[in-house]
Each structure stands twice: as C-alpha cells, then as structure tokens.
Length: 259
Image (cartoon, rainbow, N blue to C red; front, side, top):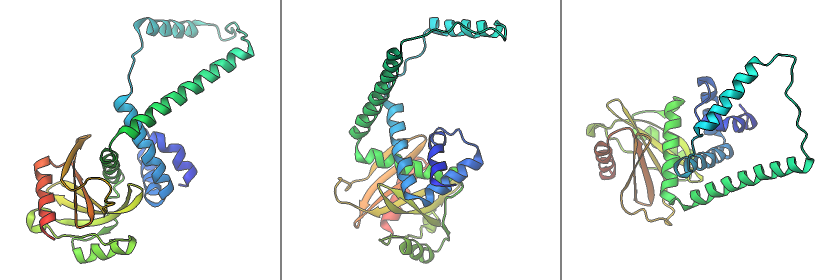
C-alpha cells in the first residue's frame, strides 16, 4: 500500500471502519513511513480533541419526523415522475458554498485551538496509547522477538541514535518478550515489550528533551489502558498496558531499580 492509498484510508482507519486486511495494510505502511505516521498522529490528536470537547446537538423530533415523511413520499412516487426543479440564483449557491467553507474553517480552528491547549504530556500519552493499540490490533507487537536483553538491546541500538536500557525482569514476574520501533513526539523511539500473565506491557523510551517537567512519575488512564510516565538517566519512559495501575507501578519500580 502506497502513501496515497494510506492517506485516503486514514479517516476510516481511525474510526475502525476498515476490514482486517486493510487495517493490517495501513498499519504496516504507517510503521515504515514517517511522513504518513506524522499525518496519522495529527489526525488522531485532532479527532480526539473534537470528540472530547465538541458540543453534540441531537436532531429534534420534528426534524426526524420530516425526514421520515420525505422518505415515505419518495418511496411511493412513480418512477417516471420527477420532483419540481427549483432554480436558485447563482449567487445564492455561492453563498451557501461560502457558508459551508466558513463552517469548516471554524471547526478546524476550534479543534486546533483546543488541541494546542492540551498539555504536551497529554498529547504524547495519546500517541503512546495509539501506538500500543495499533500494535495489538495489527498483531505487530514485536520486531525482534527474544527474552535475551543482550539480543534486544543491540538490535534497537543499531536502528536508533541512542541506546535504551533493556532489563531482564523475569524473576519479578515481567518477562521480556522483545522490542520494536515506533514513532512518537516527532522522532523514532524504542519500545520494549514485556509480559505479565496474559497482559502485554509496552515501554516506550527515548532521550529526554529536558524541556518539559518530567522528573516525577505521572499516570494517565484512557480507553481502558493505564499509562505511567517518568524520566531517569536522561531518558523519558512511558509504560502502557491494560494491567491495573498497581501492577503497572510495580513494573515501573522493578524496571527502574534494575539499572
């Protein structure tokens, strides 16, 4: 699947309207195309902002009744009959088109303003959750499958401009399953994949930019997933899983103390 096809399907991909084959194809393209991945992250963030903050106005009962009446009337109209044609001045059509464009601009402006008002951490958390969910959905959780930290670490280091710490947490109940690459906060990042019983934990790691206050552990909960965020040794860490928050905190503590 090329960039043109992928970008055409991004909206349906976000709304989960594609079949499994298309989901896998789009997901694989996003994994290998940084430009399309950036576009996906932007669309995802804007969509999320609109869903959270936009006001929903349900149709009135009178409008619903009028629509039903028109549908019923159309159903009984003879096939060779046509509804009367109403001619409208050309300027009126342009006015309607202008109004539609203006409405679209207003909606985009509102979404962009609300998106900008979100904290950087909230936006990154959204990207982390999207990356984790996409990996689960497309069954592309691991690029290098190994429980050996001395296999996973060199593979990731060869693909990135930094070397993440890979810890063996098997004795703590969090066995290493492997690692993969992802794209978060406008850069390639490392993802360590750990397990805990039937659960999957993704640990996203990349160099701390030193701009945002990331000195303390922060937690987020969205879409049934728990996210923990902390910074240590010049690296920022984001752990995401459907594990309960207590077990995820235990994982973070074990990882941090393993260094």
